Image (tube, rainbow, N blue to C red; front, side):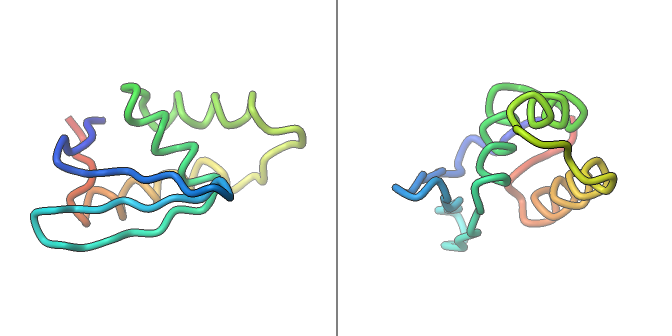
Length: 86
């Protein structure tokens, strides 16, 4: 997984954030969980690595759909040009 180097990530005071693509001017909002995952991807983590990190960071068990939810998130980020699956 590779983050598009042109993307700007801004973290807000409440733990949420947004991604900005200066090439097309589009903004994508992130809740706290998706911001956590984005930071994992920035560090070179795969979707599986990000899931493991999320499990470690959460105080309670993740829902059974967590892996599928992360896969859908990655698919969305790839479709928007924020990530590439290399």
